[in-house]
Image (cartoon, rainbow, N blue to C red; front, side):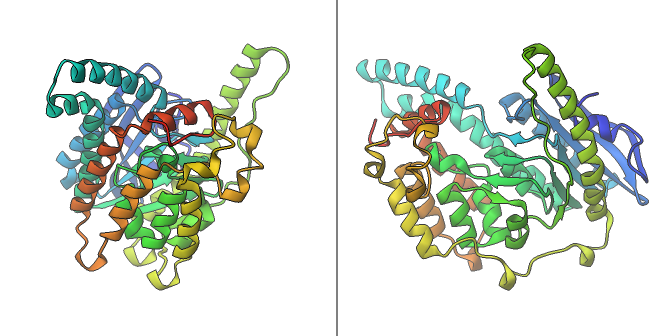
Length: 403
């Protein structure tokens, strides 16, 4: 079996015994498997999600997550830990933006027809159920992983490169994170017109504090592995002493593609042989031996004042009026002075509201996650959302005055 399940079903990790599958789902090349395993005298489970090439978490994959985690909960009396593991590839995306644009355009067409026919606001609002259903699944995913954590330790292994959106939010739900030294996390949603609606803000608040959560969510800038460790998101960073494979250009496209896929498979296994043992160690060691950053010693990625100044520039569409519609590659030098790509004003407004209402002394994680989800759902309905989707897919400068 290709991908992460191939490693956990091999005998390539010392002291690791695979007892057998607890849950299996597959669709085309994607799969989610949960295997019961034994390590250092303890019995646990490893969940492997695989969906090449960029590991987007589609609705069928979400359903498999939820069903598989139910199986883990049912077997909770026979397990002592759960590891969330996946491919160690260069990019891990969130949702499928092309699919979202197709659904949004279809919804907007029907919305215009229904409004012209005198449909009620409630009937029109129900046209966005496709977005609400996905967000509620993300909320349910958070609930199930946190419910499991009430019974035993949950560890996420973040192998490979940058994680965007849901691919960052899912591991954040775990108790402890083990990171690849080449990895990073990027909440890019504010550049699209959304927010991290799968508990991303809640879990970052808990692990890294409100200022770091504001930096990551509001600027949409990537935090690298060592930064993630210093702010409290990663507990351990595993040094991976080799680079990601690169696609060769010999003139034979098919041969180059085949060679690249083979190199990715080798790279995935070699990375996993370094990363997974550390995740197993964190899963089975005593609690006091797990590295943690004290709240008072956390790195602060930027001051709140600096964040506010940058966000004020980038959320104003007029800052980019001379660049609207141009490709990011064409204007990359010109946007350096602004701090980066345009931010969706509606996303910043939603994030400000969530963060302003945060009170650590009265923080209820589940209620906050529900508020996150509802705020994100409203953004799918915002008339400027399409501008952000199109610009992201085209890799161009969005005009957030458009509606």
